[in-house]
Length: 351
Image 1: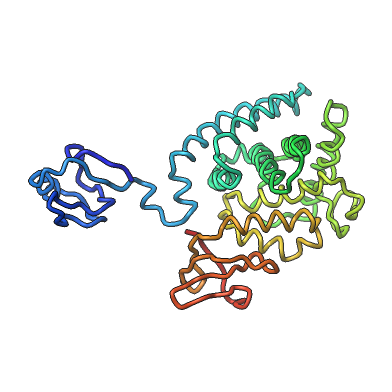
Image 2: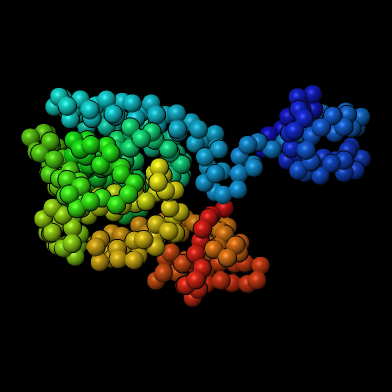
């Protein structure tokens, strides 16, 4: 909301607060739609300034409010500028083997991460980004680098380890730039042949980087980020103890980024849908010691928000269930709702 002079009022604006006369008489309640009669009456009572609603005040969900905020709009502009630089450097490397300076990538990271006041806000901003189809692969890596900084801090990693994790995130999917876009972002189910081709991106990325001046963990994260702790991953079906620790971090970041980014064929998943997907079999496929604290942080950032359930009930998140992070305890008008005891209910939107 913003304060505006009466002389600047226009028909169609909506009052954001009650308007009282100098004798404390209510002239108009909040949500009154301004018209000529309203303006005339305000002038008659010598009202000089009123509060009106702005675009974000009409947003319904939490993420709509973020998208309409001034902070997000500033971030979005900076993001697109940084994307142009990032895309140019990565294309030059893939096509002409022009080395990418780590300092350049870290400058991009710092420029973007500094636009958010916290890691939580940065994740909210990324949730609202809608890259063009031509930029999907580059955006996936750029977003993953920003997420890596947040998750690394949540895991209390030393500063040097967080910096290295961010570098891994910038590079790990670079092999996809050697594959056709229509294969990478196909909306339907991949054929067996297409999936086999897609899986080559880990080795393609490794081959691009193996003769470059990058840390060994960057190479291993590029090669191993689709390995899974239960041995069901690729390319080598490694098990937990055989997988590089940074590859384990990146595996979680990669999956989180994919689930929280909008695609032409689906909406972004909300935080509890993301957590539920990880909980389904994540503790078998991913390193539980890494995954659980990350999911706990994601869940706890939602405490205090209002939600709408599949039966259209509206309630507030008041507590997280440690053993069922995707199913918190809610306060509704009818009383407490413990979603861990309500398998038929799901959170469909967050306010």
